[in-house]
Image (cartoon, helix red, strand yellow):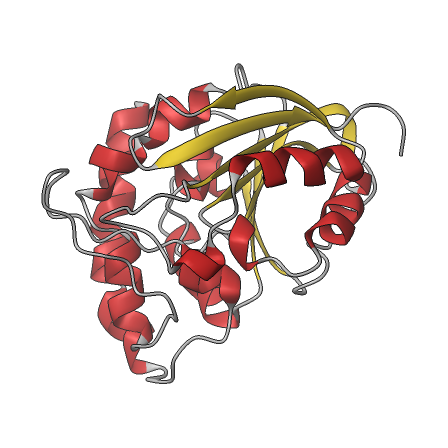
Amino acid sequence: MTNQAVLVFLLFFSLAGLVSCGQETAQPPESPMMSTERPGATTVSEPIPLPSTGHGNFENLVADYENNDRSIWQQPDLVISFLGDLEGKTVADIGAGSGYFTFRLVPKASRVIGIDIDPRCIEFMDSVKVRLPEKYRDRFESRLAKPEDPLLKPGEANAVIIVNTYGYLEKRVEYLTTLKKGMSPEGQLLIIDFKKNNLPVGPAEEFKVALPVVEKELTQAGFEVTKLDTKTLDYQYIVLAKAGSKQ
């Protein structure tokens, strides 16, 4: 099965699972990781602003996550390519939500861990997992984590992505320091988040973190920043960093 066919397969079953997922609860999500990853663009020129609080039932949240137009401004395949060849590697997606990036990583990596602090996200990703072809099913694991700890085992991940989530992490330097322990020496961390501009999409300003602050916090946590990119994506910056061998 080609990567394109896998993504079509995933999208079909993700949308098919919205009703049952949403019926389980109508409470607003409590997870900051859950509430950050919601696109809402109908087109690039006429996007719908992202809710800043995550209020709304879970069905609507997943529908936002899987909005087809998100690919226009998020460019997930291009973003993933910043990590290079992932064959033989374990990748952790922190703040995975519905698995928008997680399941795009599955055909590319040997193992993918979808991490979130909202049990509903974990349950939803697991409902997608059972519909995957067996060879991809065996590569995926969901993991319910803590707000202060992604619960990675020492040196477990060769690469980590944090998309639309960084501004919702509390005590970020401490969190990054803990995260680093769960990464292999020279493991890569990819952070994608919204620029602190007046944007037509994105969270409230209080949940945006300026790029120089991200760079400073990564350095304080012991990461080596290797790439800063503000041009590839219209609304977001891209940060690539190495864990380094010193823990």
